Image (tube, rainbow, N blue to C red; front, side, top):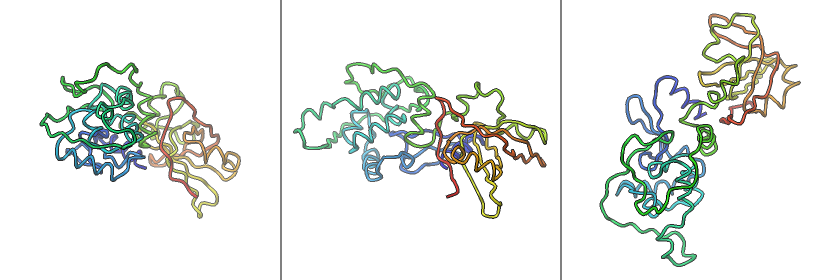
Length: 296
């Protein structure tokens, strides 16, 4: 999945920058030897033609404020909400909820249009500086601000917490440039082995692994055995499930997005596979992940 590709890239030292209306293109792009920028193509619910339209506007003249962006970008309210929710408007606001608050405001130019006339575009041609960069997972790295000069008050909403930002990313993009969801709950999982540590597991010992289910496979040549791949913040661990255990836990295995698996370590030349003995759902408020690639 795109989420797994992004996490694997980050584990290999690649910096992945978030979607930003001032910086992103439609496609994800390489912006430096070790850096990529996510594109609008990963935003669920954003129509390609709408994105192309405001990208043409931005190429002609950079957006200078959220009000300017709303005026010149022909986006639906739902599309604006999605961009605000994932942090793509943070270049014009202090944080995501501040952007979400301002997206719900009625722009001054809307008050001057005839009711029911739709979203009219007004494209003033005054020159201005391009917006300053602001990362979706942190404060601005510059001292300047691109918030609208006409804003009369700050948002009354508190900034999202880190888990809330990760959840919002998965809701809109099914991936995140923030920490892996498993990292957010790691302190609660004292008896769970991380994927990166499995090479040290003793052959034949009984351990537990856990993570976001990214793949379920049941090859026709495997005599009913099922292979499950679990992703955590350090990598991917793999488990094998016998036909009998699969039948006992079929619904759990096929429906739960996060699993914990207890089983026997099969460590051959540092290639580790866990032969499952018990399978549990991994449930926590901080856990939200991507969909898996499964047998059908």
